[in-house]
Image (tube, rainbow, N blue to C red; front, side):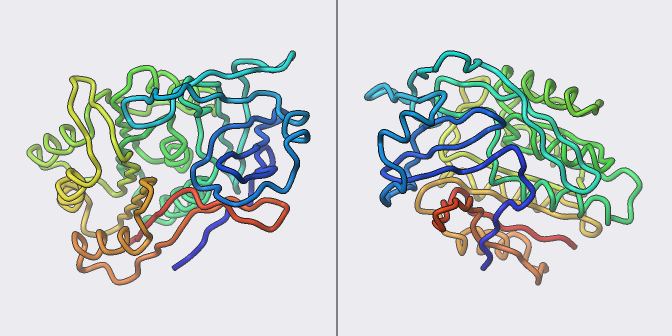
Length: 297
């Protein structure tokens, strides 16, 4: 089992965490927002947090989004914009993201996923195929999609929220890329259709939430639907020159669960990488944010 830390961020930093909150720097702005994994004490005082934070998320009691995220509002200091950009570089990959303060505490990227972006970029570059086909499910604002596109892949990006697809397209264009295929659809429904069509992909990236809704009201519950999704991914992944990345954010899901899902639906795969994606802070603590399992063949 591996604990992977993103080592190539220049415009992101976890400043402090604890008492169910985190303090992060995105570019030149520092934001404060809830973090259910941060059960320990903060290193900085409350006064320091208040002084440092340019924007603070306040949860609205009893309100959640359709995928279970907290709903709330941001308090911004003078000069703190609603939207701004940051960049991420790794080798020849140059990504640019538009960030924004959303009503459910997110800002548009999950910085810990940078380690997966690197893996995607390097794996695609190493495939013996000129333009591999990549499928990104529950693709959000497209960090993995534009990482794959920057490596020369033919990318299909699937998300159920139209506004998020628009955001993803902005990130693609800001990164100097084009021609990603955008699909606004329930991921499970899309995979069922692709299996019936006999389509296959050289890479599949899936980042399913604990809860969610498709554009036509389809209900997604991770524990109820993950088995069918993994079976479809098994049918859709090319038997050679291929890779798969599974991310799980659901509280209580361990890396071993992610590993076992890979073993179950891809029994021929022998070399599975699995573990947690973590963000280090200067105090020496590490904030665990995602469980992952991945392989290439």
